[in-house]
Length: 424
Image (cartoon, rainbow, N blue to C red; front, side):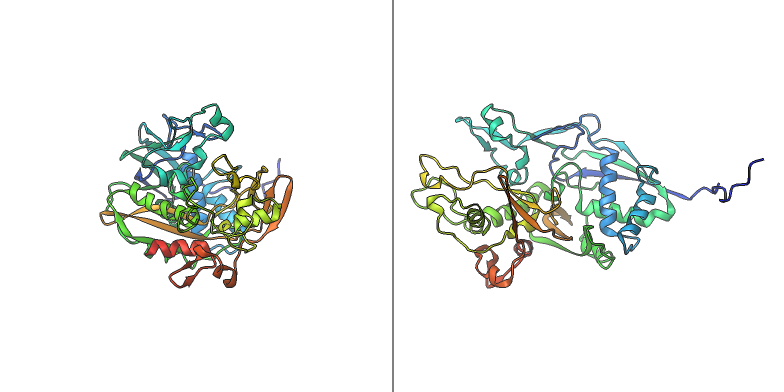
């Protein structure tokens, strides 16, 4: 006879289950969302635009950000995440099913070719184009008139999700759902507000800050983006619809980073450029590191050896004007490839700044959330060369950068400047 097993038999007692169905809608245009992706082309899925795998991935991320179990180590967090949301060898105890899909989407063009066969932004899409730049074909593809990608509009269509989970995990599931519904979405580029979702058929309230305060003191684990001490700001300006509120948040980010009179100076009177040189230190620092500079740009605008806009996320790909017959003085700036700011040891550093519209009472507002995260060191890739660079600024350096000085205030972190401007 075989020896009796040393371990106790598995419990036959069934766990108490809880189940609920929630209805959702998209507030903004969706960036892709389907399984099929090819470079700049992001395809919609006409059959299953809302996928269980995508929803589960979002909930896992926001569960980690909330840390409802108050885990204090990365190993402890991983163990609980595996128990609740599953691993490669263990199925999740949280069952998610799509009860109904939102239906077919309407394609939204962001870029088009003009009469001169140049790729330009479609009317009314300037702000969205700033966030949807990956939809542009490469310059080589543009020469072949490759069609740019499009966004997808599901209008007011509602989709329903069913969640079934052990009652012991209710606080975990509810924490993840609240954070996803408040700050997340589906598809690509959700940190810039694409595919933002919200509960349907429910009266919105201004309780996001109140709910956020309940998780702000949960432990923060190094390397894990967290709502611990996260910042949340809502604009004072309201809008009649979510798209306009979303545009206002993107517009401010574009102005801060590249806008004329804010991130860039006015062009010379004889120039045909829409804006002048950048008032941020990165372009002149790249010229210094590579030893290449156009004659018109030999004198730096600001001499600070730092790349502060890396705070918004990396990689950042830099493009310099190649010069033309109308602008011969712009020829000679760095043109090697790749030319990008890269997080050291990582492929990318996701932006800690999350933009989206929120509904308060009956009006929509632009809102921003800043996650607590560890900022990696960075390097500039310039062709075959690699240059270690600095992201952080001290108050003295920030004082010399014009965009970081606003109404007598000086900001060492451009994200803090964005929040301050948004709150105004």
